[in-house]
Image (cartoon, rainbow, N blue to C red):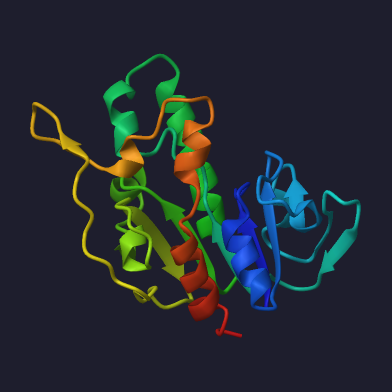
Length: 215
């Protein structure tokens, strides 16, 4: 399959498909931390999401995709779309940024591809587009973390749990009763947002195993 993984600097999903013999590419405005610049398109991904395109990976190699991609998986930024963003929704300029983020999300939904997966957390998209086709957690796929992830699907079946673990226990409970899990307790470093956005390895493997067979 020819697979485009948009907005992915970690290359976790890209590498999972590559390991199974697919021609997969990651694309992002950030350089990849996954160690494979030869599979990474650095820059704006929108010009290539509909296929019929020529692009250059970071190693300088030019590639050509005839027709549409076989599968498009997108992880558009959730900074202005998640529930967490609601508490500052009325800050100056915030609504404009949210609308731009939503338009970016919908560009992937409406791409010219028969098989599309768009990922985001619970938030603005759920109420202003539609509810997701499924909600998953890393512990469904063998990684002992709780992180609610929504998937909007087109032309692909829901992802089946591959290695269900017990639901993780909260690390602590705040005074107001809110349960805090390990993924929310990451240190507040400059790379925190990047690290929290990475796809869990078990989820990436399940995507490649299950959707990679839909040729």
